[in-house]
Length: 217
Image (cartoon, rainbow, N blue to C red):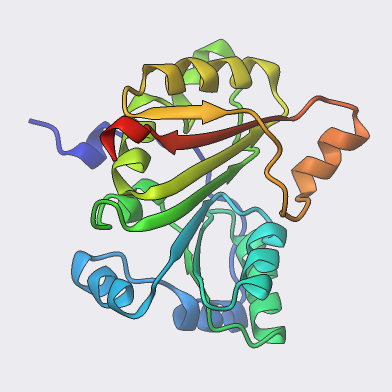
């Protein structure tokens, strides 16, 4: 029988390297992904939010600066973006950001159920070629995992400017029996590099706010 991790298809490609200085910083701000370490973190935090694919870190930095009592965990395999965020974390002397540079699913699966307040997934790679669609991060299995880990008042916020991926996301949300969703703007958030590119190219951005169904709370 295959282990769960062996069934996962990678939705990213590792790019760039960390400088020795940033590698040292990463050691300071990395989250340990084992269940015991996560249990200790949860015991110290009232609210935890996770951003999956934070790019250069504009949004997670904005959230951490404006909500110092919330712990923000950023998952990002793109090491140049990790370096960019770590530089800002040190500059602002932030104590409420931790970083994970491996597959986000390997971390999320180890969190207790109903322990995450928010998941942010902004402009995930659309893998536009039909033969590559299977590499898309959003699918039924992944949405079910997020729903399982969301608190009863939690939510998953997803944004994309790729029309085909938006239809794909809508389809798989509908297949997740324990969730409902709205398509309203998220309100307070920072524009990311990819969001700016979408606006400059006049591409429509679709927003999905995924919630746990009230009848199962």
